[in-house]
Amino acid sequence: MKKWYKLILGVVVALMASCTTVEDNPSPGEEQRVITNEQLADLGCFTDLHLHLDGSLSIAAVRQLADIQGIALDMTDDELREKLQVEEGCRDLNQYLEKFDFPNTFLQTKEGITESIKILAQELKDLGYIYAEFRYAPQKHCEKGLTQREVIEASIEGKRQAAIPISLILCCMRGDENHEQNLETVNLAAEYVGKGIDAIDIAGAEALFPTSGFADLFQLAKKAGVPYTIHAGEADGPESVVAALDFGTKRIGHGVRSTEDPSLVQRLAAEGVTLECCPTSNLNTAIFSSIDEYPLRTFMSQGVLVTVNSDNMSVSGTNVIREFQQLNTAFHLTIDEVQQLLLNSVNASFASESLKEDLRKVVKERVGRIR
Image (tube, rainbow, N blue to C red; front, side, top):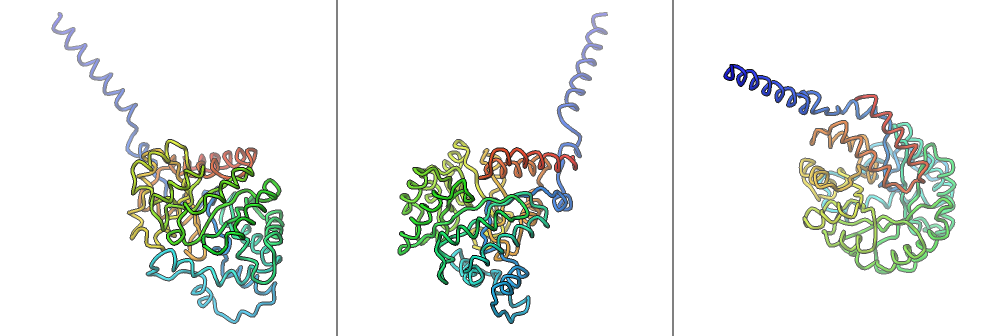
């Protein structure tokens, strides 16, 4: 009898273990829950935290801005594309930055600046964006007599009329002869923060002008209560990210070269710093030779907050949807991972808390439709 009892008990235990295993481990289809590129295209809840205004003027926008400002533009679409978009075989960030001179010629009047923001915001809405942050350097738009203040006020007017909620980030520029202009940018940001301007940044030739050399700008911003993000870990190595973190930033523009220092990746995760990743741009500037090398999984697996952005829609010929799709093709993102990436953007944004809550609801509702 004991023999039979033990046999029956063993069978029951085995069955219970089997049931537990099945319940704890979803079926193959349920376990993967991989999103398709078609589903990504239809989500309609995208954001972009790293978007340069001058690098994102479409061909249609350039034509419209030229017409508004009476600028002669006898060029075909292909010729305009050649002017706006970086060519294959771009060597580095310095060559990439050469593409900004042409679009900036259409951003030297109040009307051009206001209209460019309205046009871009409408294009993003048409693509399915629900929020974006436009960044630009006021000092780059003073070539025909505008002051930085006038540039800023024109951009705020564009923001007021934008088709989707946007934030505005003022960029200081790396260099060794424009310190006064950078100080003016920070001081104006302090004056207009909460009145249409949301943060500052520093952009430009990172490897030529290291981040560590601009500490005073961010000390001034911090003292004045101006939020900031900092370009780092793109053309320059992990030391630029360390400098940015030492300045107290909670957001890093790019930051992908942080992987060259494992302890830095741990610090990013521990301090809850968000990376504004821009894959196509990083391929354009030869940081990586293929999307398969992109450190998305490295960051995500170690708890680093990652966001997906376009950087320069026209210069790189991309948008956030395409960025998600190429990452998905390479890394087979799950629905949950896509939702988390989208929520990371909302959480790290310079939007108000009430707007963030509204954006979170939209993301969860739209992603919930494909679960």
